[in-house]
Image (cartoon, rainbow, N blue to C red; front, side):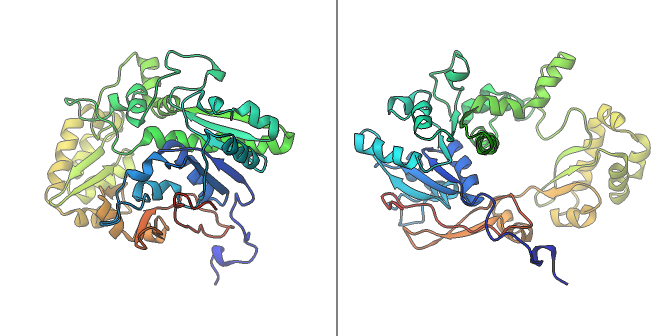
Length: 388
């Protein structure tokens, strides 16, 4: 019997094929946004200055190939794009860009407010050339077109957005200092939010014939992710504190050390709690703390009991015992991820060939799947100067 994915009638193109994106973005937030468009089939033209995107030199690189200007950082978020090198400080460069704008559905950039305007490439000028154009921008602290703020001229990086948006305050152990999240969520989340906003504007532009300026602030995006601390302060007047891996309203909910690693485990419903206590030989806990509120009030006792059990088993033994019965997972390192068959089956470890070195480069794949469309295909990020 054919699977659903093998049946006839599937589309022959990726969902965004036919959409053209002119991409001026650099670093991480903007390139992550344009990467999503490229992965979904859009024709993304990455516009770089003659010196290239600054992250070309950031690495990591294959040993002995540090001069390729095509390291892991750049490859990861610039795959599936075509390259175009132009000097925006010259009249010819501006003219070449305006020619591209005339063919585009979308323009993306993540400079500080006013930079593109000073180049003579403002949204207003581009819209004069292409009235249906959707112009998307990631700003650290917003664009003055939506109102002035005290931080309009401030530069921003991921750690600043995490700090000011409340994430850093909430991350870490209760008795420790604020910690940033280990990955660049202050860049990646704004990039994903911008992709959603730009697609919404494209839908409307195709109906109305009128383009749009779409902007996402890194700080706004991070604040939206900290929704719990906002409503917690509003409802209860509480300034939430750091809790490490635990949760203020659910128990058990945390990370536990096994004899050879760590597991993450949550059993907050009565069904999951009963399954957990039965499996680990502590049915007495289910009777003593039958409700989530009772477990939350006696969190120290609950956590101590689970920690004591976890220390007696390996991670593999814990997963075999509880997998499928309660929410549980290994706390994976990068090496663990490469060994887990799940990520291979889901197409989430994508192998590219680095054209600079000829060596294999593995990057994280696209998480968005379409049943009726072809699987995503991937090609390497563009080499600097290889105008396509």
